[in-house]
Length: 259
Length: 259
Image (tube, rainbow over all chains, first blue to last red; front, side, top):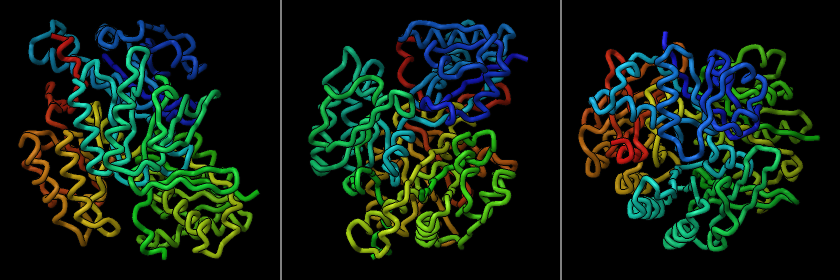
């Protein structure tokens, strides 16, 4: 049987990796992943063939995973976070779709049995580290305009603002993209208070984690890098301080029952 | 030390529970949760004091968890899914906030050390079971108007439509609420094609899981109950069929690079 696991390994902390993800990796002979992800996984990767490709080679990585699996090698394609959220899973299905439409020449891909194993995504790790920022309706927006036109992204940010969703920005900046996050901030400021709490979560749940709680009007791209999740509260999100402990939560609306 | 863990145990499959969640439960003497959740957890709950309260008693459950922890009993408040997403975590912080404002009379709550352990949410389990439905920007909307005015919910659905977000509806129906989901469908039909793929995932990852892929114009509340997640694709989401296998994915925009 020809098998491909698409595996999300969570935000970084090994205690947040689902046993199902480890089992999928253990069952595989070949792993397709950035080297960095595998270091976090540890022993379960020992003895596996590790296939790496440079950052940016996403299509090559998805093709390689399908090719390996189709050749009979049980393969795991691995992302941190949830592989179904801004990660590699969708690209594998996009390639399958192309094959089904006759635009690829890999009928063997269609024989591969695919299983997707979800993982805890950065927004969840971030929310949990500061309380309950995702406590009510929320959305995610990727600020990468490599594949999505900036006009589409901007329209989404306006919609997120108009709908008063908590917003998590993925891919907030990169070495070549530095102005998008500030533009996103300015759009959201049209819809919600300047004091709206914002979480900057860098290297969440990892040894070098750093967490900053700021205000929407003080959010600046210079404080953010590609390892940072940026989550912006909705108009009701609250930043509370209990001694030296800071929390951010988004109420569900129980207040009227509490008072 | 006075400790309270807020723990999400994922969608149901025990292989999707993070080790950190099990460790938090193991470290606790007292568990506050629906009985049903604990059955799924198995042995780790043996020997713990189990506190249950009727469905609907969310505030009472959060108070009880804070009271138990403040009395010196290490306590775990447990939800399925992610306790930070439409679940109990935010209510605990709302109570703390009330105490900080002097609107409660429980200064002992402020001494409790709180740790939140995130879990895999239903939308992630659903997306993984059908492919990669959450592959690009998405949002969540709770259709429960118990605590949020319906006007606010309707505005959010319009925003989700205008922004072309993949939309996951939590609390899509209940015994007393049956029209909201069809109204939500009609709103989204103003923004995206009738053929937009929709996932109905009931009891996801559990023994009695059932998964249906339908079209937006065929979505009907009569096919949905309170154990069902409803996720609606965006205007580019694709339902593909490979033999007897059905997949749904939302492209990230690589197509222009693929062709």
